[in-house]
Length: 48
Image 1 (cartoon, helix red, strand yellow):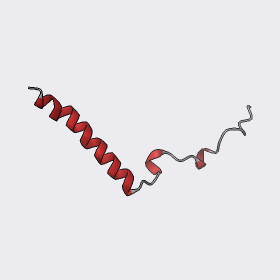
Image 2 (cartoon, one colour; image 1 turned 30 degrees about the horizontal axis):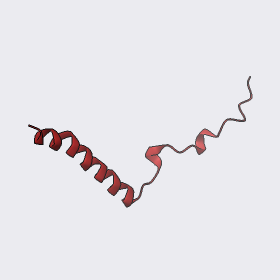
Image 3 (cartoon, one colour; image 1 turned 45 degrees about the vertical axis):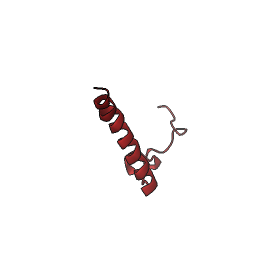
Protein backbone atom coordinates (compact mmCIF):
# COMPACT_ATOMS: atom_id res chain seq x y z
CA UNK A 1 0.00 0.00 0.00
CA UNK A 2 1.07 3.56 -0.56
CA UNK A 3 2.30 5.63 2.35
CA UNK A 4 0.08 8.72 2.66
CA UNK A 5 1.73 10.15 5.76
CA UNK A 6 2.50 13.41 3.92
CA UNK A 7 -1.22 14.16 3.41
CA UNK A 8 -2.83 16.52 5.92
CA UNK A 9 -5.07 15.12 8.64
CA UNK A 10 -8.65 15.21 7.25
CA UNK A 11 -10.04 15.69 10.77
CA UNK A 12 -8.02 18.90 11.17
CA UNK A 13 -9.39 20.42 7.96
CA UNK A 14 -11.81 23.36 8.36
CA UNK A 15 -14.42 24.04 5.71
CA UNK A 16 -16.18 27.33 5.11
CA UNK A 17 -19.56 26.55 6.70
CA UNK A 18 -17.77 25.72 9.95
CA UNK A 19 -15.85 28.99 10.17
CA UNK A 20 -17.28 31.83 12.23
CA UNK A 21 -17.70 35.28 10.72
CA UNK A 22 -17.83 38.75 12.24
CA UNK A 23 -20.49 41.42 12.13
CA UNK A 24 -18.26 43.46 9.85
CA UNK A 25 -18.17 40.65 7.34
CA UNK A 26 -21.97 40.42 7.46
CA UNK A 27 -22.21 44.18 6.87
CA UNK A 28 -19.80 43.96 3.92
CA UNK A 29 -21.84 41.13 2.42
CA UNK A 30 -25.05 43.10 2.83
CA UNK A 31 -23.56 46.15 1.14
CA UNK A 32 -22.30 44.03 -1.76
CA UNK A 33 -25.76 42.46 -2.03
CA UNK A 34 -27.47 45.86 -2.18
CA UNK A 35 -25.04 47.16 -4.80
CA UNK A 36 -25.57 44.01 -6.89
CA UNK A 37 -29.35 44.32 -6.66
CA UNK A 38 -29.16 47.99 -7.61
CA UNK A 39 -27.07 47.17 -10.67
CA UNK A 40 -29.33 44.28 -11.65
CA UNK A 41 -32.69 46.03 -11.22
CA UNK A 42 -32.46 49.79 -10.75
CA UNK A 43 -30.01 50.63 -13.55
CA UNK A 44 -32.02 48.77 -16.23
CA UNK A 45 -35.26 50.34 -14.93
CA UNK A 46 -33.74 53.82 -15.20
CA UNK A 47 -32.66 53.17 -18.78
CA UNK A 48 -36.23 52.47 -19.93
